[in-house]
Length: 322
Ligand SMILES: [Mn+2]
Image (cartoon, rainbow, N blue to C red):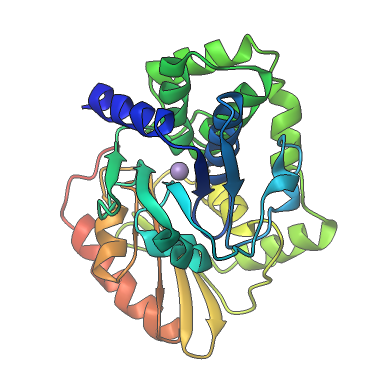
């Protein structure tokens, strides 16, 4: 399957000249890593390429090459091909979704199990650790990998695998990383750029929030409801999850964040066989088996009640071994 899809994509690249690349809202390492590596790849092939994103590039990722070329306000003009990366659905591209109708061909490259198979050509592989790993296979087939491409791909795979610790990490991931590291990628510097971002107040905020940890189902479900969420340039949710992961017993972690009186953002992480994509999907969201999210038009308390009682079906009396 992979071979056929990659060959089709290579044919599309060969036969066209103008390209648009986009990824999902709330940019992170894999969205930017896959976009910028594909951009560099297409530029090497002398194509005209523009990256459009709904959101601005977070400071944490401004070490990535060519990020300054990313645009946020698309103009109305025709393009031959639009690449939509790391998006389970085209609506995940936010404002840029409208721009997709300007393209003759929409190519969907994604690794979310919840992908809706949108686009004229879709290459969807939930077994892949990241969209960046998929772009690696494309780059490998075209035989173009250089230092900058390697840096972008490394960043995407590194962040989407939680620094090679999540269940989506396997021997292939490490083989690819080993190859990318021959291009003088510096893991300690990338780690610092992406994860050492907090100011003292952030740590104080996290420590106050973490005191409200709640548990049910023999501590198999662990969650946190945060009523005074501080929307930061970088994602404190991930830091909170990394602390929750230190716990021994839970299978599922949930963070509820109050967006306003009637709206709650909910993120799920699983470190067991519980499929949190199914849980998010039930509540209108989606993602991966081990990481997913949704937004509910409910207040914090109601969301907490509904979601936790639903998750209990997946843990109570079930064997949820890791
Ligand atoms: Mn991804």
